[in-house]
Length: 292
Length: 177
Picture 1: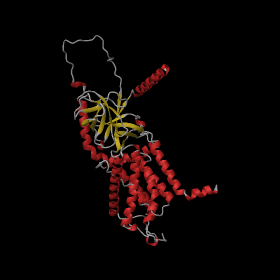
Picture 2: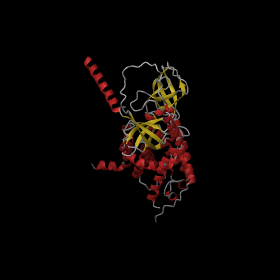
Picture 3: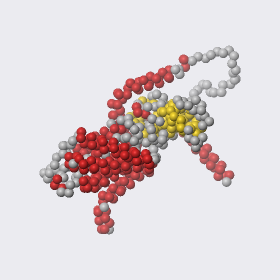
Picture 4: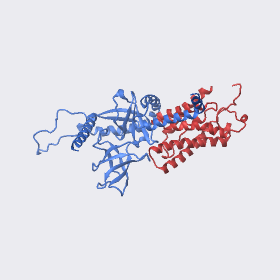
């Protein structure tokens, strides 16, 4: 026993070094699924406080640009107003007798909340930004975030009481279901961790015609993202000979450098969709098992 | 200002500088990432015991990690340089310790050449380990090597500039104080 204590005393420094290394590395590798980092919730509250102080100052420098974006967004919304359209009386038109939709009520699918970005990074391979809304304001994991320009910025991955963290599109684990506006072909947008100027769009078959400048929107099959928000435009086409799919460079529509005012979009039917998806999976598995 | 108070101020300043100035700068290139917060560990007094050096290193790294949302990454690198630091200092100190009685490492205390070596070795280790850990998760070998060289270069540049711009008033360590 005495020898043990002597040993510990003798090698105290190196033992504590190894212990601290092990602690740091286990934090890094065991918990580093992007949303399940240790104490991130608590730390979120503290860093959130400092970031919001900084943001108060930074806001002033970005007001002009922000104002321009909001004005543009308003403009596009004004154009959607009911008053801008009229019903054309064609006199002759083929009617079907019954209405196919329940015209007396609408069911809300998406709910949009406004928020402000407090801190933001683009230099790392895993980039996050922090917004000033949290569980108290109804923010939950997996909600999508668009900026005031209507361009996709990321999705919420961690929520604390007053703040939440979003994974930016510039995150090597980010996967977003996307489609080409022109042909509605489905693909997925990722980031290869190299150049923050460009995202990568995969899974678009070569049978599709793609040209530089085509618009990429969020896809129809995403649980987290509302379809039809702009992700970016195609900036380069890599013809990968080994597959039947394009690898497309996408220039993001959002300027990740100065994210400021954002909207958080909630898919109100997400739970139902996910539950259904899981139930289907389970059912199929059971059927297969019975067959064997 | 007392030693402790001065170091706490320094900690806050370096962390603030890193998080709110250097990280806000638009990236010049994806390999050129300015990092300076670990200069806090390099500037800690000689009198800090090796165990406390490790603990302080861990806390420094972890605080920065929580600002970048990547717990453990910088903490591991900081613990490593905090562990290596006493060895490097011992190697670079003149043998007769009567000449070497400043409070903390600086160009004035150690001389420009040994100080540069001291900074270079620890910077290289810090960035090397950091990029190595990132590389374990993803990335290619060539990227890894270029990134270590580029970040070390920019780190050295920053630290030596800081040393020239802010010469610290260093008193001799005496028996009275």
